[in-house]
Length: 555
Ligand code: SRM
Ligand code: SF4
Image (cartoon, rainbow, N blue to C red; front, side):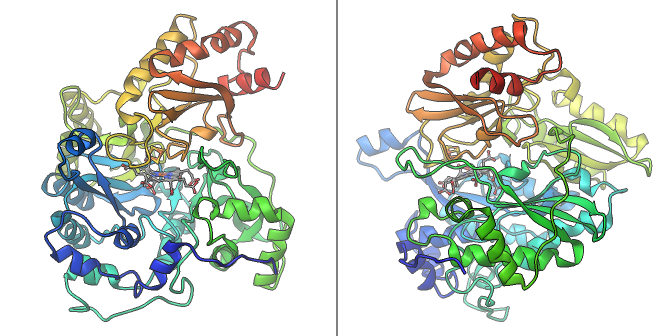
């Protein structure tokens, strides 16, 4: 067995003392304060709730000696991104009653609400509970929302695979009933039996978050190499159907901590279907024991892999399993990310349409009324929705007759068709950053439109406007929009500048490298322009920008 260090951080102490995530949350929900105390803020995360403040008014409030504007973000778990129309309608309604009127689709197929006040948290939990949804486990030191390519859930897909994200989510959801007591029932163990944690998580849960994604065998929209554990379906010549397991990916870094870095996952082995849950359990369990609980900045599985090496980690898993994993299948050759946008037909004659949602923010404003359009569709038709790992939404289960109705509703709401989108706009991602994210150094979501315009004009002035380029932007190096695996990654560096990374692959299997530091927002495209020039003159006809930039920077 590998050695582990065991000197707890204050978060570990808070977890252990919390009576399985209860702490004083219930009492604090009842008091008049607009916020929670320090330990409770940590526990809240397990319930899918983040304590934030409106950073747009932070300065003026503190200058005026006033209390910050305390608001809360709630992250709703959506395994595999699948939602019924009834669930969508409930999510839509809650965004008005207890949030800021927007619904934020995340890069992990979940939903976020922003701007909820403390007094609205229980109401939100109850509204979710009524449609069998929860924010419990949306954040915190547990297995997070399980991500899965929407194409694995089409009607003709293998039913086992279509259900696997749900099965994993179910298996690894913490069992404590704390969330239902505190947020839904509003009193300790009123209507439900008290359940504490099963032995899997214990009372200190995991050292940090643990992320799982299931890729399509022919495309990598989930960014499988950026996960703690990635699964790629395949058929083994002797073991039959199963998955190649990839472990130890993660993208977050911290400027103040040089020992932090982005890392791609490495192939662990092949796992037949019958063994999937036990192998995941072995990996999560190994992480639970070996992850560094003394330093939260270095507590992710990727550091266990980086420190111990793949072979030692594989040996650890074999010891825990009591058998050896088979060698993995070769990685897919054709693995470019799909954006799932536009209309696609299924074998059973039904259709789905992928709708672009800029930076995942569904709202009604002067430019488009996406929220109303989706509501009207969910009210009129028994469609299903799939959220994508690219912050977009798919309306699925549409009959051929219903297509014109949906097209018309989307047109009336000024929701642009996939074909009308620019080559960067179509896949650009941005994290929320300001004004809600406490970690943001710079703007991201709110400036994405202007950044896309800058870059698309730079491409079109060189006749390159039809060439797709994956651009992703974040307000800090935590990397929530996965810029480290983008062709162009723009990462907040100081209050008014960004670092530019280039050279990630379109398959998500290569990290981008630093191209220029501390560039002002208005100068981002100009900074990359010489590379666009070189791509235009020296790049191969089919050479993606990421491949070219990587070739250029390794010269
Ligand atoms: Fe993230 C923290 C938003 C995907 C790496 N992330 C945060 C917080 C909660 C800020 C905080 O800690 O105070 C952000 C909430 C801001 C807000 O106002 O809403 C936040 N992360 C997001 C979302 C909403 C971005 C988005 O544009 O959709 C994504 C929610 C995913 C979900 O539904 O579960 C989101 N975050 C990611 C990803 C991408 C992924 O998982 O595919 C990453 C990089 C992959 C990884 O984990 O390495 C990511 N977020 C982080 C980190 C760095 C973690 C690390 O160990 O290095 C933090 C900071 C932390 O955990 O301390 C963070
Ligand atoms: Fe916040 Fe940084 Fe994540 Fe953006 S990347 S949401 S700024 S933590």
